[in-house]
Each structure stands twice: as C-alpha cells, then as structure tokens.
Amino acid sequence: MTRIPTEPGTTESPTTVDGPDEAGTPTPPPTPATRNALDAYFKISARGSTFGNEIRGGLTTFMAMAYIVLLNPLILSGADVTGVKLDHAQLTTATALAAAVTTILMGVVGNVPLAVAAGLSVSGAVSALVVPHTTWAQAFGLCVIYGLLIVLLVLSGLREKIMNGIPLPLKHAITIGIGLFVSLIGLHKAGFVQSGGPTLVSLGPEGELAGWPVVCFAVTLLIIFVLLARNVRGAILIGITAGTVFAFIVNAVGHIPGKSWGSAPPVWPGSPVAAPNFGLFGHVDLFGAFGSKGMGAISASVAVFTLVLAGFFDAMATIIGVGTEAGLADKQGRMPGLSKALLIDGSGGAIGGLVGASGQTVFVESATGVGEGARTGLASVVTGGVFVLMLFFSPLAGIVPVEVASAALVVIGSMMMSQARHIDWADRDVAIPAFLTCTMMPFTYSITAGVAAGVISYTVIKAGKGQWREPGPLMWILTAVFVLYFALTPVKEWLGVH
Image 1: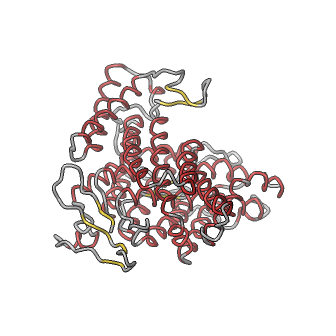
Image 2: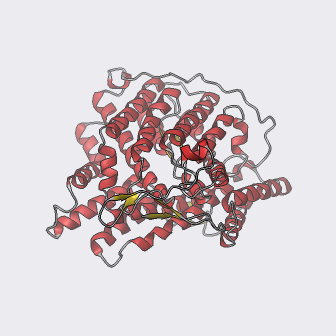
Image 3: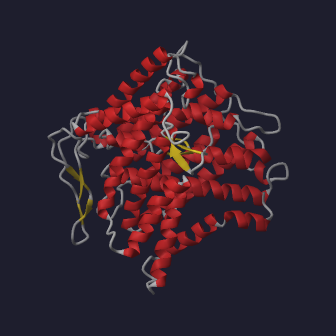
C-alpha cells in the first residue's frame, strides 16, 4: 500500500491508495466519510487532502506557470512565415484558452493535480523547425496531427503499457531527474545560474550575482524554506506572495531598468482588463504541410515524429514524477486512472493546434501545487479557472516576477530528491541507468533525453550480462525508438531532410 502524507503541520492520519497486497491481490483502502458531492467526486478526503489544500495548490501551480501566457506568444510571434507574423493579442488569448480547457479537463476527467499548457519544447520546435517551411495554418495542423497520434497510442493502451513497463528504479530516477531539471530551470530563470560565459554555467553572469531581481529570488527562496522548516501551511504560496510584494517595493524604490527583470518588471498594469481576441481559433490546415506547398511528405513526417517524441515522453516523465511525489502511485509505481490523464494530455496537442497555441503538455510546475498539498483534480480545476480569468485579465499574468516564481521550482526540486532513498545505488544494474536518467535531464535540458539515456543503458547492461529477456519487449522497443531519437540528425541528413 502507498501512503499519502498529510500536509506538514496537520494531525490527520495518512491514507492509502489502491495497491496490491503481498499476494498481488488489489486491496481497497478504507473509505473515509465524504463531506459532500464535490468531495466524493474528486476523492478529496479519500486521498488525505482538504479543500484548502486543493485551492492553495491550484493557485500556487498557476503562479508558478503564469509566465506561459507571456512567453508562448513571444516564442510564436517572433517566428516569421513569408512575411506574416502572428498577432500577439491573438496568441495571448489562444495560450490562455488552451491552457484553461485542457487543465480543467485534466481535473474533471483525469482527477489528478496536473496542469496543462503550451509546451515550450513544442512551441520552440514549431517556430524553429516547422514554420520556416509552412504556413501558420499548416504548422498548427501538424500540432493537431501529433496530438491525435498520441491519443491513438492512449486508446490502444500502448502508452499506459509503456509507462507501467518501465522498471520502478527508473521511475524513481525520473522523479529525481525532474527535480534536478526544475531546480536548474528555476535557478536559470532567476539569473542565479547563467550560461554563455567562460564556463558552461556560472554563478551569475560572470561568476558573481548581480542585480536586485536575483536578490528577490534569494529572499523568496529563503522565506519558503524557513516556512517549510516551521511546517507552515501554504508555505510556497505565502512565499511567492511575500516575494512579489518585496519585488514591488524594490522596483519602486530602486527604479530598476525593465530589461533587468526576466520577464516584465513588477508594476501594476495601467489597465488590468483586456478583451480576448479569438482570431486564431480554427486557423488550421490539417494536411497542407505534407503537400508541395508545404514541407513535403518526408519533412512533415519527421517533424510530426519529433513533436510526438517531445510530447509523449516529456509528459510521461512529468506524470510519473509529479504523480509519485503526490503519493498517487502504488508500490509498483502505477497510477490508478492513468489512462484518463494520458488521454487528456494527448488531446492537448490537438486542442492547442485547433485554438492556435501550439501543442499542450503537462507542466512540471504542477509539482509546486503538489508541494502545497494538492492531491486531486480539484486543484487543476482551480488552476484552469484562473487561466479562464486571464482571458479577460491578461495584463495581470506578469504581476509575479519570473524571479519570484522561480524560487518555487527550486523548492520543489529539493522535495523531489527524496525519491533517491528508493534506489539501490549498490546495484549497478539499476544505479547506472538511474544516474544517467537523473543527470541527463538537467545537463541536456531535456526530459526526453534523460528518459532515453536511462532506458538504453538499462537494456544494454542487461543484455551485456546475458539477461536480455529481463527488460521485456516494450523496453527493447523503447530502446530502438530512443536510438533513433539520438540519431535523428544523421537520419535526416541521410534522407535529405533539412
């Protein structure tokens, strides 16, 4: 049985989720008395959570990922297709709309605390790989296709089988790797760690910290750590709020140049209200990219394959990592109701393409809400509801500086490291693949690369010891796919694809 810890500072007894007993027979947990229909539907009490936990968790997740409403339009509007650039206001509306729809669906249907929004890896691939050779309608059409392909993988049961077929030590390693990855993202976004200097990465721009925004990050980080150590309810949300107030004061007193902040400077917008612009909705050419007026059949197929890999394995690893941290996985690392969550995640690719926001994927920032005690889909409904508000109050999306929100990512990274205790580091059969999984995610800045390195090394080590049957057929299929993933550039050169 898997224990779900209660929020620090509470006196409730931890509960359990369904899991097999020693004989392998599923043992249902004792069902606590539910308070109302909402409690019964989301299983709030059954998962050892409270309405307060879910609301705080949903708000915290939004605050940690609100930057996507600002950043995704910047990525896509910067791409130029035959002299045509997308309207920034339309992209902002599309980004908020797609995130709202998919996140609410994840909460209502999947009942997991996972937020979904435009994946930066997908948006980056669309702007750099696809749109120079297609129209925008064709690019969004490819997003719809890759999303539908992932949905087919879910409906066939293959995606869930792949997730359940990954050895448990690698699942723990994925959680650790994501923790290191989100910590690096947080440190980099805050300007605490930077790249491009005399070394690969450095403390600040030239080996030392510089600028008041980094101070705001450090102050927020220390506030959250102190509150957590004191078992204060809502530590992350309180810390982000306090850090934002501090940033407002610092910016007002110090008159810091706007370019010094990672996103927009912390100032109250002149008008917090902005009317949504749905001009990109339905702007889709489903198969145009495969024709002579698009990328061509081979190039478009390679682009779809790239998008499927990014969307499939990034989301898979994030769901495993966040779900394990939330205590929603059983002793074998399997999550009840996983197929529903995977279906919504896959649908996010198609929904994002349909509304003009590029493909949607599960956000690793969901772990911040889990850190606040979120255990059910109600937290996702709260997060999605705030994205709905952003359709009309988009200027408020930048009110929390990225440096302040980044502190929450570092905190969550520290929490996810606790999974290291479940790995037998003395057993090299699993220790080496686990190490590669953990390190490749932050070192390559890619979740997929970390999963790939772990899977390939695991099967090769087993084969090298004469135990090639032990990984199972699915792991060997994954190995072949990941070898192709790493060899994608020479394969494209061989096919003449640019």
